[in-house]
Structure formats: structure tokens, C-alpha cells
Picture 1 (cartoon, one colour):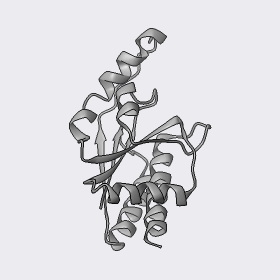
Picture 2 (picture 1 turned 90 degrees about the vertical axis):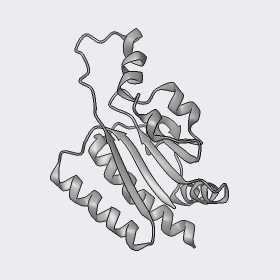
Picture 3 (picture 1 turned 30 degrees about the vertical axis):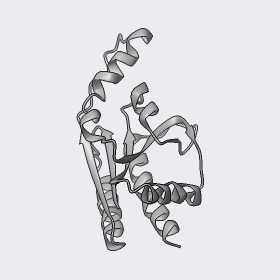
Picture 4 (picture 1 turned 135 degrees about the vertical axis):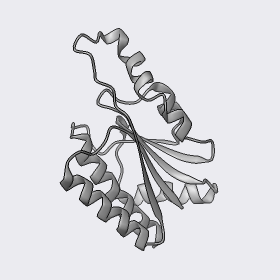
Length: 155
């Protein structure tokens, strides 16, 4: 199975980059592959009005359409998503295998979130917490969770 993270923005902090690379290596040693596809982020205008936020999010995430196929099991990470255990997450990975999906694709938006179409396309909207965390840290946490879910799914 291929695991992919399609996300907005780059991980700039060396600590997080190194940890993510180590986790990708751990996943590779389990016989799996984790690809990370970073899309360019947009600078949020200081005067962005509430009614223009969705348009901004659509523009920022527009390249995601090219990265998500109908053969992907899509998990959208969003604050309003469902919180779950690693075991439950592993069950979704099992479902993706059962459905013969090409990949499990995790989607992370920019600081304003994901467009509506991504959440509608997603097989699962998942949340780690109702709290707000830095994107770089959460990307590392997601990689750790993917590794743990792969181990759990193999049990």
C-alpha cells in the first residue's frame, strides 16, 4: 500500500524535517511507502473578509485536484473531523486494502483549512484534537500515527 500526504506548505524546521524523514524510513522498513506531496501555500491577505475565505481556500488547494484520484482512499485532516484511536484508524487502512484502493491519501489544507469539495470527497474526515497545533508538528505527528496504524493493521 502507498500512503501519501498531500499538504499545503513546506516543513521549514530542520527538526521536523529530520523526524519526518526518519518516520518515512521506519514505514519503508515495514514494506510500505509514504510519499509527501507539498503544494505551495499562499500568503493570507491581512484584510481577507470572511465571505472571501472559501474562495481563498479553493485557490490555495486547487492543485490538490490533480493529486487525488478516484482510486485513493482519502482521509481529510480537519478540526471538525472525527477523533479516533489508532486501532480505528488501522481499520480504515484495512478498508482501503479491502476496496483495493491504490493509496491511502491524507489531505492537509493551509492555515484556513480545506475546501468543501475535499471534505465531501473524503472517505473519512479525521481530527487529532479540537485544539490548534502548528502544521509542521502535526505533519510529524501524522507520520508517527501512520506508522502506528500500519503496525496495528498488520496484527
